[in-house]
Amino acid sequence: MSFGMMKFKIFTILFFTFYLIGHGLSAQSYDEVNELIRFRMESDEPKDKIEIRNVSLLTIEEIIRFYSNRAFEKAWSKNGYLTEEAYELRFEIKQAEFDGLIPEDYNLGMIESFFLTFEENKKNGISNATGDLADLDVFLSDAYFHLAKNLEIGKVDPSKFGEDWEIARKTPVHDYPELLEEALEKKSIRKSLESLYPRFSIYKKGREVIRELTAKVKEDTLNWKKIKVGKSIHVGESNPQIPQIRERLIYFELLEEYSYQNEKLYDSIMMDAIKDFQGINGLEIDGVIGSQTASFFNDSPQDRLDKARVNMERLRWLPDTVKNAEFILVNIANFQLDYLKNLDTLVSSRVIVGKKYHETPIFMAEMSYIVFSPYWNIPYSITRSEIIPSVRKNPNYISAKNMEVVTTSGKLVDPGSIDWNAKSFPYLIRQKPGEGNSLGLVKFMFPNKHNVYIHDTNARSLFALDDRARSHGCIRIENPQNFAKALLANDPNWNIDKIENAMHQSQEKVVQLDRKIPVVLVYLTFWADSKGNAHFREDLYDRDSEVLGALNK
Image 1 (spheres, rainbow, N blue to C red):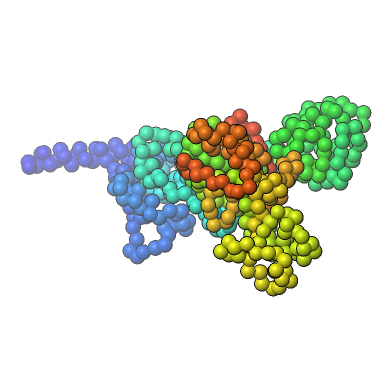
Image 2 (cartoon, rainbow, N blue to C red):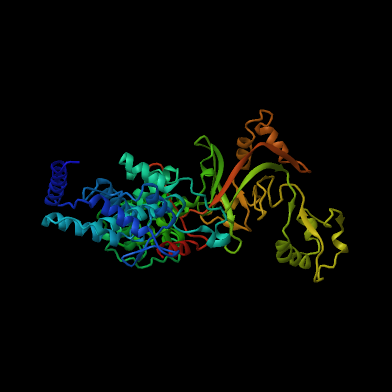
């Protein structure tokens, strides 16, 4: 190479170096940021966590794999400035509040401090430091991975609640580093995060409810002193609690301001709003203000926001199998069963569920057969706590209740030959088929370790109650004939007359279904319907507070 050619090359390098410096960039800025990112990822010794500026990253495997796969190339800045995608992700981290999550869980404070610094730099014409660009890059990627996981499978592991929730936590189906690479390439951060939402329309509707509740909490000035009603209040009666109830109806936008002569009088204008309130909250729509209706007036916007957050998390726990074309959903907190097929609700029925201390468990199983005119094989716990004491008082109790005693091998035993005062009881008691059978005339079986199933009942008056937590754990259905007809619709031989006949036999008749139908028992004390209306239910089993506490950690 000639000396002149060498001088020309040196001159060219120096020219571009000074040109870049003059435009606020160092000649090696591209590589500098990337090298600093690589340096942050590398360590001379194994570590359980990576720390940047004394803040622990939320992920390890994902963050290392993401940057290793892209040769440590920065993801969120270009030519020393943040990209639109960086601003989009910051916005989405803040929006996680409406998923019931806590934006600060994703190091938002640290991320915000970098953004403020960069905005100040821009005002003052100062270049952004390469160290700041590198560290923010890592924090943003880390936040994306952690938020993505929380949106897909939930923040809290439901297995920590033991028998309170026995539906297995779903396994992530997305590779988050790959998802982020695709999102950066398509410039679609928001869409990539939305793709992780549960596939139920009620989830997105729930986000809008949380958005509205968050605004209400900020604006709330009401005194949320507990409303207590002893004797039920009927329209036309006066009660000192009426002014507070009226105020809250107006607050919930169920009643407009109006003039009245007696503020303590429960008038007909208020009654219409009370009926709307009862309908929204799953109560009997009778216009009577009883203790249960009054209790729902005690939920402040903050209380409702907390409840919504808890149940958005529960929706994130539910596995994808819930989206099956055909499944049976029982919401224990709503006392309701829905049988869905191809997004159509074929049966919707009131149910009775387990009372406190006999709580219906939360789990999934597959319904495989129906038993018409069933025996009731009485659980030993009920035999010991209810049947034996009743026989001691009335020796004819067994025959009066159409029951029989059998050995473990099924051999009949004369009740008169048994010492009912003995400490041990090596027998089984079952109730024979018939109108008086506690299981009613049919049961629907989805074998499970809890021995929980859906069945008819002879105590039909209980379906009229608001509080239908009345069973020992099994689920009693109000319209078993309609349910059986829908389940057997594939077989034209099973019309309603044949079903009714099968329900009135002296011996059991077992009918195998031609397919196994997922049964999902859930516990949702809040959801938003397809129109965006919020529905809140009583926390029957006092489970919301534990989930809320875990969410807030």
